[in-house]
Length: 134
Image 1 (cartoon, rainbow, N blue to C red):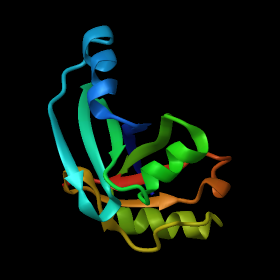
Image 2 (image 1 turned 60 degrees about the horizontal axis):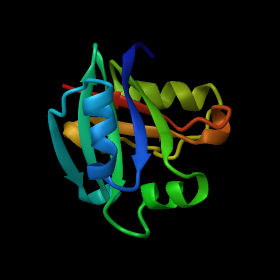
Image 3 (image 1 turned 90 degrees about the vertical axis):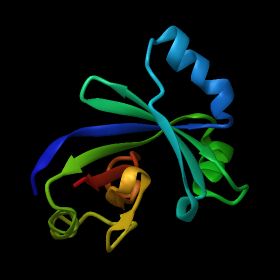
Image 4 (image 1 turned 45 degrees about the vertical axis):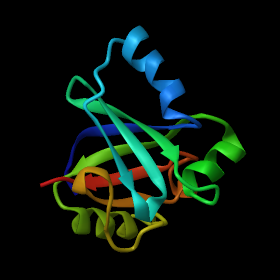
């Protein structure tokens, strides 16, 4: 598996409108867009920084994964995403290394990326996302 770069840092927030001023006015980042990912019950705000980006994640449903994360942990870093050359090879490699996968097959995430998550129990409590972008 070839890891190309840190693709993004996913940060769970209760309210994008309340969270954005810090990232825009204090940190000086530019909001380049938002997207709702219905399958994951999340609205994502994209803020590039260098060759990676911050993704602010607001739940669109009380039973969504971001809502559950915030209920358990409060707002904060929810996952780290690493861009890989080939998502299928990445999943196979992780399984060969004994990593527990949340996603056995890739699914589509924000921005049309093919994604798959490792279970945090396999990565010392960190939710790790593999991401392949065309």
